[in-house]
Amino acid sequence: MSESSAPKAPSTYYAPADLQKFGQIAQGNPALAEAFFGYYNQVFAEGALTAREKALIALAVAHTVQCPYCIDAYTSACLENGADLPEMTEALHVATAIRGGASLVHGVQMLEQVKRKGMA
Amino acid sequence: MSAPARSLRARRDPLAEPAAQRARLDAAMPPGPRFEERLAAAGWPALHRGALGTLQLNLGKLCNMSCAHCHVDAGPDRLAENMSAETAARCVELITALDVHTVDLTGGAPELSPHFRPLVAAARAAGRHVIDRCNLSVLLLASQSDLAAFLAENEVEVVASLPHPKAQSTDAQRGDGAFARSLEGLRRLNAVGYGQGDPRRRLTLMHNPAGAFLPGGQAGLERLYRDTLRRSHGLTFDRLIALNNMPISRFLAWLEAQGQTEAYMELLTRSFNPAAVAGLMCRDTLSVGWDGQIYDCDFNQMLEMPIGGPSAGRSIFDLDLEALAATPVRTGAHCLGCTAGAGSSCGGATA
Image 1 (cartoon, chains in turn purple, red):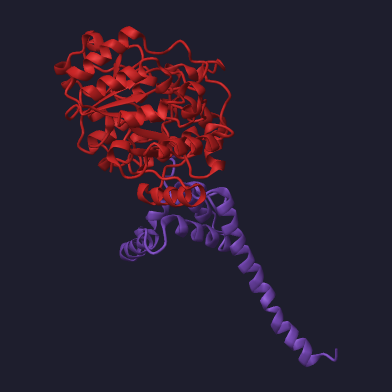
Image 2: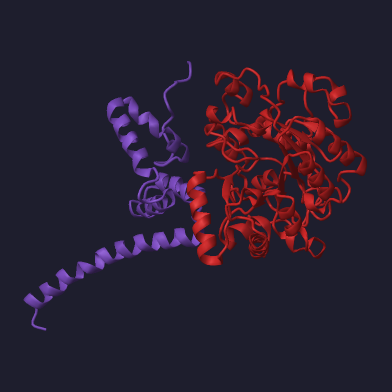
């Protein structure tokens, strides 16, 4: 019996090597992939924001959406563009603060309902 | 990345041997085409030279620093491998005889060689542009208190290593306190007119990553350095060049210690950029070792890969320019370090 050429079933949901295969997503729809990657590359080109600033934003967003591929990619991009660990850590705290704050600010809804329905 | 106290040679690290480095790099290559096959596919069946433009002289391995990424394995303990008076005298002859526009002095810390200043003087007298590849901290040595003035007087371009415009990353690569000493070196250069737009006092900063990644865009990094150094320290420079870390010598030893050698070779291979080939320094530079041997570049020199062709012409004492022009550049897996991303040469990005 010859060995199958089909990819083996992955042992985990995330494999670091898969990041380099991102372009293969074009197989199902080349036109949409071309449009997406064209847009993506334009977004990250130097513009009103520098490549370094965009990499720091992307790093923070990557942690918010908890994408391990994006965390790998934008840790590298931050370092490549001269960001250092204190800057990267502060960017993460911005994401963390917004994420935590988003929960906490809903507390106003809770508070008002308590005031409406409660006797306190 | 923290700077080792001593050279690989002093630590008796097996990777002090160039043959061991070459074998390790070959073994660490990812599957797929090798450097030479990638070159051929990009239209370079052999890597031939263009016109000779730069004579790069490596004055030896002696250095006052021991940086973690050093491709020379230089350091204060490297007292033996430094240029002799006889070799320096022959270099002076070549500076005049060869049709080159630039004489590029490197090391080690080239300024520590007793032949540095006579070589600068000879090159300037012959009308050559002179580059001093300077580690900045050498300017602070008591024996070099007049170095900044000497460089300014002789209109030498200073190409100074500064991996990052902040202390943490710089010190991680170059040793504790290196950033502060570098700033003081820059201050002394600024004080004698460097870094203020005067082409006779050109101050070029050289960025290389403090780790196993490639440099980002050179223009963006230059802006970051310019803003940070001016705002935080009141220092100026003329331009910034970005170089890739070569996976040889101490940077290779660091990759090995981190378990990153395969990943770095994969990164370099994946980032192969055919557009970076034409501007490679090996195509217009003749690299001379401290002992007078001739190489295609400083990296081949450190890997002990002398120029190809007849062995008779491999020294400055029997240089044969015609044979050299017909001989392709010797290449290996390490060459991927110069063709990755935006490319990397002694002049920075090549693509």
